[in-house]
Image (cartoon, rainbow, N blue to C red; front, side, top):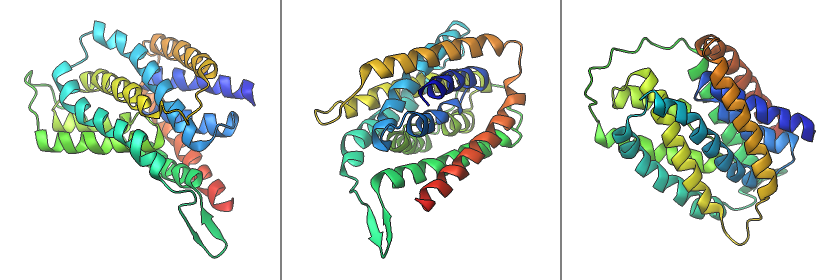
Length: 264
């Protein structure tokens, strides 16, 4: 299972490099189902892995000028604050079990996985549907500050709870709320994902949380190799053609997790 897990790490990075946002959503299922990592800890590991791979993946976008730094700061700050607070205060405060009704008990791990599976289904929809043609950029970014602030806070809470980067939420927000061209939205989202994930991970650095740094670095290294290979292949393979197929795979995985947890 560990061999399959490391193959999954490479595929996660490869997918992230090929299609951009959405690939990191495989991290938690790989950690839980193939490595047997406890659910809450797997979301912490995922923050580190997703943050590090997104940071590496953003370098090529920086060179191409596809990062709008002002937008990254405006969107990123509330997101970073909310993800850190979620990991440091909200996740530890979730009771275990959450509640019991007759013979049914909703444990903390089950609740997090169920919520994560719902996020997977939402993400799959954004990947399967045909994207609308982005309007040509006007050169001047127009900010809807209240909505960007609210979106940043919401994305931060979601990231903190499930450990996913949230690119499927961030990219549409940057296109619609900041009027960024799609290429800039993708590059900027990677910077936001990297910063909020890595800084959010700091919220898990508590004495009672036992972090296996050796495992984290091995998994992250394999994922980074995958994202670099994916970035090179993306020049020859259209990510837009691969995204719907990957979306269907994510949908099947999300439904499987929901059924699996309910049966348990």
